[in-house]
Amino acid sequence: MALPRAIRLLAAVTICIFLFLFLQILRAEPGAIRLPDGHKGKESNSKLQKWEHDPQLDPSGEPPEPLRRVKGDNYAPDNENSDRINATILSLVRNEELKGILDSMNDLERTWNSKFNYPWTFFNDVPFTEEFKRKTTAATKAKTYYHQIPKEHWEIPSWINHDLYAESVSLLRAQKVQYMEKTSYHQMCRWNSGLFSEHPALLTTQYYWRVEPNVRFFCDVDYDVFGWMADHNKTYGFNINIYDSPESVATLWPETLKFLQDHPGYVHEESAREWLEDGMHRPDNKRKANGYSTCHFWSNFEVGDLSFWRSKKYREYFEHLDRSGGFFYERWGDAPVHSVALGLFEDKSKIHWFRDIGYQHVPFFNCPNNPKCGGCVTGRFTDGEGWLNREDCRPVWFKHVGMD
Image 1: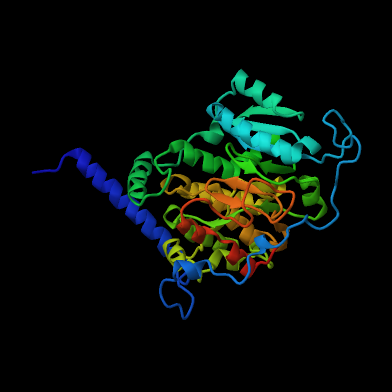
Image 2 (image 1 turned 180 degrees about the vertical axis):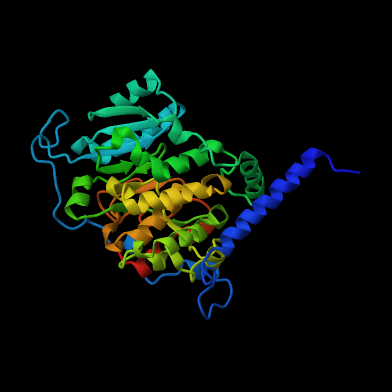
């Protein structure tokens, strides 16, 4: 007896998805998934997190001079000729997240922005409510701006096969890939990866500081963070450096290697590629992610130069990834996508760890040894379960790149 049409269709889609994943792996460079020579199986959790010295326990102080500071009214909110540079605080946020973003705003205003008064720019895929605009405007002396994301930047792109997407969701949910079933999460990751920098409201902006709802800031920062980035020729600033779920990015590295085969000259001679390909600390992650360590900058905190995301290299890379469908068929986040691009295409010396900015996005912390900090435990990485400590990728960053 013939099988029902629905079952035949489901079987066909399942076969297609397995073929898609298999082909992505085959297209990787032959050595992409090989573990380092001499590797002897899994490392213990204690060994994974063993380092000779945690620099977060050292007194952090401030980054090197020059540092731009408040002098008189040079950063006053109503000073049209202030010392503020071309920069904004940026937040993608829903109306229903009003309380969470107000909490984040209050912390950042208290610790930093009440001194420097950089504008806040809010984005949403639907119009902001009057309540949202009224309450966020009241939370700062700085200017506030509210923008809707263009429909064509948020919708699922036309080349995505919806049957394949639905089957991918089912398969990766079974592998416990978080948020896989939430279409809005995929849309958010895609927008944050490569479309936010193209929004008309930001086209004349150079630097941004990304802030999400429900984050904490613990330390008084008395210098202009944006000014420091510009004065020291930095492209990107991070706070927390962790491992990703390898199941969520299984074909990101194979797709990246395909892109590099067509653009071999795009890798910077002073890149952080070793950080991206490290296999000693979490070999299972590298194996499951087909050559990628899964180390990434946790992008819920990032201070960046938008010119990098608008560069020819990055635009071509993002378009390649976008056309491959991995933002929907898998769950590629903007954090690994940004990190892989930075690790390959930028001089590693232009990537800065803001060790002096105390920060929390549940369940992880950056808590400096600094008298200007309060409300967090010095050196604490997580207040969650003990096993979360092995998610810290800073040892790998310090090993291959160094402190700055």
